[in-house]
Length: 402
Length: 180
Image (cartoon, rainbow over all chains, first blue to last red; front, side):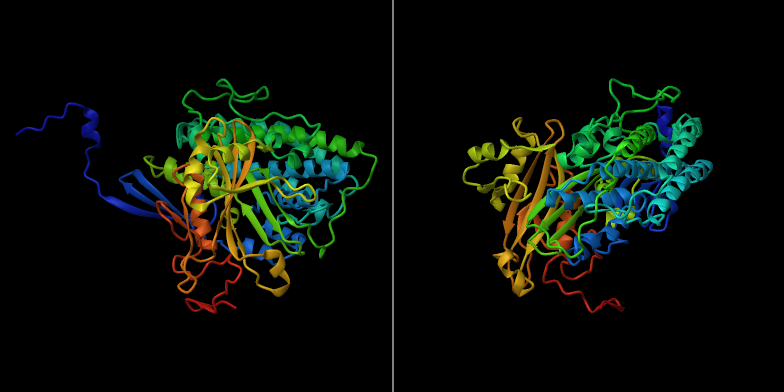
């Protein structure tokens, strides 16, 4: 009996393979922290991805129930430690929403400047580490060189370089020191032309494009169903950004600011001149789009910081917002507020029964939802694509495990 | 994003028997409005909330559990009846509206055996709920009926108890590691 193979591709892939379970992590460098992925593989093809999380779990929500609201700020630092300023801001705004309080104008502009600088620093790590995941070492060094200068600015403002506890319910712990805004503008001036180098190194790099285009495609409907947010949601073509569409308590911070929500509209992005366009192989919602949205958001943040600095300096009233008294009792009630952090929508839910401590302090993590799609978009791809997908989600385990 | 002020009334019209109460935004405090539903009817209401043109709540922002159990005498009055509240924060990406839905459960289905109370799962409607229900089960002890794979997601699989319960006691020892 003769087995005729008509299609040559069938012959090529008709190799006898066994199903195998591969453990990736928790110490694998490209899983961005202590994330363990169990891959069910058949040859090079992954048929199932099972994430195991919880290695960093310290039940921060329980800790929050036993502390005054201001005392929980350092714990929010340690959730998303790459964007700690934005975490501080989220919890501060939730507490302020419960008090029906808005900081003075100077404090509002200070917060915009700080939050957008935090976004730049966070996206720089996301960009650099993504290059590292795909085997390109140098973007990581360049990204950290620039991030270092943002950290220097933060250090001058609050004394810390990673876990700031700077923005706090009521305002900020201190005003910006003299000369800070000049140094900030100098940094932006130096930083803006460098973005073209990143585009040359990664965005339009042939290897990078091959590794990311069409890999891990997430459709807009699934992105919404999975509750993804931030660049992951916008990379799938969903036009949604809390800075524009969020709760009034959050969007009023950006009143008078001009910025674009970075998302693909009619097949193109509103990118500044000189930015490489979308490669032909890219599919909306793939890893390349997620990365690209992040890169363009950095440009928007630069513009927001510039606007913020100008508004901050023009303000005559020097009050930047005094922190709330530490042991003061909270008004009874419950509020939920989400803010647009670099990684997505970080929500804080605060239930108060009128004591100094919250009855319930809940943190809704953006990375938690963003990671939950890995089981779906990781199915059917090659093992080598798994780091490319996980990297494009830009997760931080401290926030997932809380 | 604003609270959908019409949705609660529309829900009440449609599910008169399944809505426990509709609470409007408080005027004297910053408390947010919410709708409380009967737990057994939750899956049906959720399906309508997601799919009906009038609601279109396609995005589940958050799912969490609040445990009301007075652990000290001074809080007893503010806490009121012992109960668990499961809170769903929904929003509509297209309509830019949000809605909060709550379901109240007894703290234990069987207090002596410490069996967690049950609530219909909505993981088939919003994929977000799949992990969040695991988290709520793990930390707060609510059994989501119909969930595809309800497991401990943050704590180790052999962990005992639900840490976010107010009467939770930290274990003295876990695999030879001192607890407190």
